[in-house]
Image 1: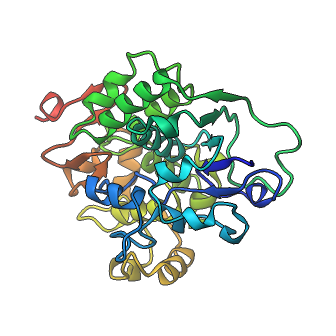
Image 2: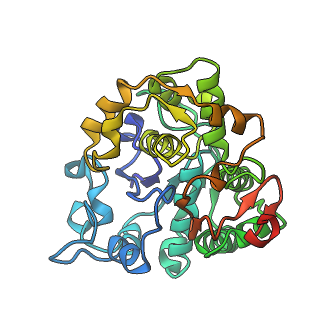
Amino acid sequence: MKPLILTCFLTPEFLQPNLADIAIFPYFEFVGEPLPSPDELAAYLGSRTSSGGPRSGGHWSDFSGYWDRSENKDYRDLSLAEFCQQYEAVELWFDTRPKSQLQLIWLLDYFRSYPGAVARLKLRLLRFDLIGVPTGGLGDERPPLVDVTNKELATAHSAWEAYCATTPASCFAELGKDLSALPLLRPVLLELLNELPSATTGLGATEIRMLELIGRGYSLTNALFHLESLRQTRVFDQWHLGYLLDGLAFGPKPAISGLDEALRTISRENLRDRQTAYQRSELSLTDFGKAILAHREDFSRHNPIDRWWGGSHLTNDNLWRYDPVLLPPAKWRT
């Protein structure tokens, strides 16, 4: 029997009939927004009910393609763990990006309670990102395949609990542990921690990098959003990058100017109009933005902070910082 693939990205390769019975990708990304509640996650992963789940799509089986080809299409209303037990092997294809590794540790933590499913799990050791891989791009060779053991499950459980905690302290502590069972996890934790506000600027790595690029003349959002090799940060997707720009432009003391004013009132659900507004923006640094880049000003001392980092709600009164050690609010507040 062909395997089931659980993946961070539905590359066209997975839709080829010789690779898998079916490929499924998670709905949740776990960055930039409040984490789903345990009830939401349980409804998503559990058996389909008549009402479905609480979010768009609602059930794990809604995030796939070509169900008509699957030998097990009649079982798609089962819980994910029960569905996995219809296969001899379940391959986990999760690449190097932070959101992909967060999805992986969440799923591994879920499977801990289902030994029948764990016995079928195999982890692909990817060294590349799946996004952008064309049909046939994987070639005849496949990334190494290893069994999922108690060591991988324990590492995932500890890391997922740490990310869901109400402060980043537990995630920072994970860096002192043996994470070798999941070799892509340590660099991802560092990337995530770097998105906490800096001790000197009050901004995370992506915000600072966008200010640097705007200051160098990259005034259009297409470059900021889509040229990852230029931006050099990978935590946020296009829409969350836009929300970061909103925060830099529309606070009491903005760091950038030129962001389309319509974005103040266009709802986040209206992606089409938001994209149009971003595309007609032409950005530049304010004097305050230049002072931040020179480390003479702290963005958070002049503007409200209200954002989520995993399970941590960051506000001006609860602003954890990282630069490059973790600093609780009481350590830097004067």
